[in-house]
Amino acid sequence: MIAVIARGQLGRVLLGRSPTGKLVAVKQVDQVRAEDQEFRARFLRAVESGRELDGVHTAAVIDADTESESPWLATEYIAGPDLRTTVETAGPLPLPGLKLLASGLAAALIEMHRAVLVHRDLVPGNVVLTPQGPRVIDFGIAGSNAGAEPAVESLAFMSPEQVEGRAVTSAADVFAVGALLAFAATGKTPFPGDFASQVTYRVVNSDPELDGAPPEIRELILSCLEKDPAKRPSPRGLADAAAEIPLDAATAPGGAGWPHPVQDFIASNRADSEWWARTGAQEAGYRDQLARMALRRRRGLVWAAAGVATVVAFGAALEGVSHWSRQDGHAQSLENPNLALSASEARLLDPCAVIDMAVVGKSGTRTADPAWSYAGGCGTTVLESAQHQVYYKLEAGVDAAAVRDTMQPTGAVVGGAEIRRADPVGNSCRSAVVTDAGGEVALQVYAEDDAASADPAQVCASAEHAMAAVVKLLTVDVPLRKTPKSSILRLDPCSVLDSAVAQRVLGVDDGGARSITPHECGMSGTGGTLRVGLVDETSPDKGSPALVSKSLGQYTVYTTAASPDGCDIRYPVRATSGDNAEQVHVSLVGTASGADCAAAEAVLTDVIARLPK
Image (cartoon, rainbow, N blue to C red; front, top):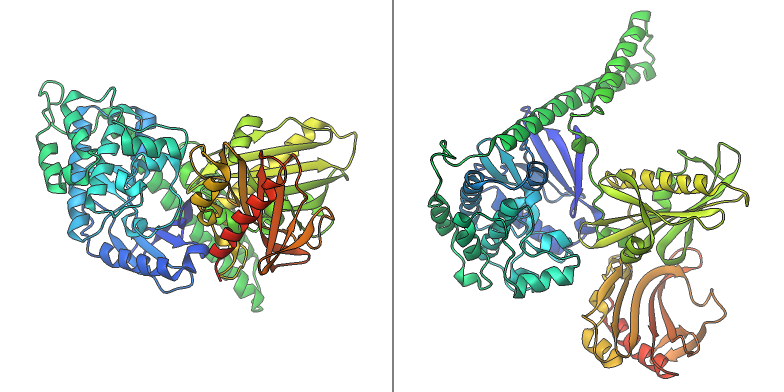
């Protein structure tokens, strides 16, 4: 392996080299999905189908291991920019470029569907532009991600039947091609929206927005974006229609092709990729030689002065490669992958391991072991160089919408994520980032200096520095907790909240249940606001004396007294570490008197029945 290219919804993507010297992209599945036998079966079927592809318009399968503890798939590495980056950098494609894109995507669909393979995730980031035309990537595991929460920007490229959870055929990929062509022609998605519910509604019910698309291609795009799958063209029909797109000989004397700015961008990107791969492999070689030298030394070999000089030379060369790989214009995206923490990963994130690996040591020496805090957070105190103590706490259970509403951008971007900061409060400060890779996830670092006279600006700088270190770690490694398969922490809280039960409690709802954090689902209506959380925190029988135990059928639950503020009720599922327990937490606010607790108990009883046994 040469480097980590990126993190995706399924795990890490690594750049490697095969024994024959061919560059490969290795997709390594993360622990959460590797433990899912249904996922493994889908992954195996996808790999077997992928082997049937000829690789002319897709990325050819080189090798795979579907049985290992961490399943992986190696495909041909295609050097070139993706469609999203190209359009954002060079602008919308003119008609000759759109014709080449349409023809290439149609050919890729014919190739995939001949292998009985439906992609299901044809988004701009999965289309790589080469001098010869577009190439489709990630086909090998696109269909294996069943059950994952799609990112908001991906929903605009999903067909109505896909977003509604209905049966999906090759017609879904044709719809995606129409959305890709619309994006390439206008620079915008055809179904815009800030929230998943908005985009989903427009995909299912609204006409696409095609302002700015050349009239010569609008009919083709509209035919692909038909709501009824039966009315969309087949891949062969799409190829025939693309071939008929008229071009003006005066403005496009060479026929279909990329415009010069795109050609230059492709060439620059390929040169950077090849340079980086070459120097990355050279760096790996230097590291291998240093390791072999160290091994010989441990075996008792005596190094002569010439040997020492060789080590110095290797070390200098290694540092030189590392230095140049950090310079502008040299494939920074390969060295600094974007943060792509999904909601399913965030539910099992081990914040104590993260804060210990990312913050402790870089900021100072911790004075106590990291300790769990409320709603899946973890904190520890660090003795910094100025001999003052700063308490750091990392939380993955914060509301992404609240982060955007209450915290201001600092201007710093790490791993593709914009770092935000709240105003300092006394000697404390909060910093956060939001990522959207399979469900919105917000991460927050809280920093508090033990000195009451601490400079607030310095405390905020410490929080931002710690937040950046956390993001950098999570772009390449996501430490996950070891939990049994029956753990409720693995569940999406919205999956155990029955809408019909909630509506009986709330009356008219405001649009259905929505994920507030990876650990909490919420729903509001005329009768109040309901929240259901699946968390690991202090067990209710060891925590607040305000919680009173009571029997709820065969279960022992803990509740607060009914008040004008509503009712809070908890059910401990299993003990974890220390005084903590996995528990279901139901709160209901906004209705009158004791009706709150009776309604909350009804919801909790239904949720308990839906938990894994």
